[in-house]
Length: 122
Image (cartoon, rainbow, N blue to C red; front, top):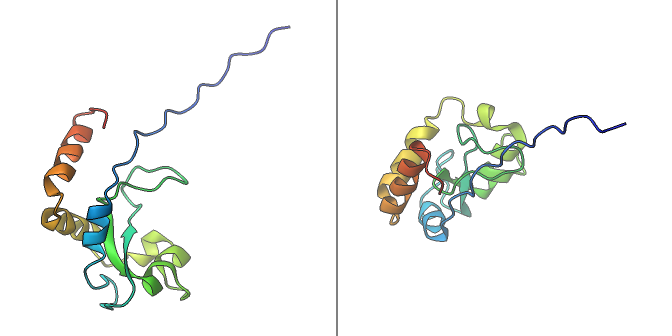
């Protein structure tokens, strides 16, 4: 007896774009949710990122969130309540675009985004 046909594995996405410089830049702003200026972090927005389960989105998909809004301990934190509920009523795509436009690595981000749009591997 021979084994049945093997199910092909789904192709993994191309490696994500990372930039400590961009994340540091984003973390230099007040929290986008509550306005706090304490313990601000660059928080990744997964919605619309095409990142799979357990995969972090590209670093250009970050916005500034204080530690409390980002990961808790509050029940209404991004990682506690889920992205769709957390971002309800906030134009997170506009925030991401504004951080990109003001970023010190803007040209690098725009180049990678253009390559991805054309299907060129990053």
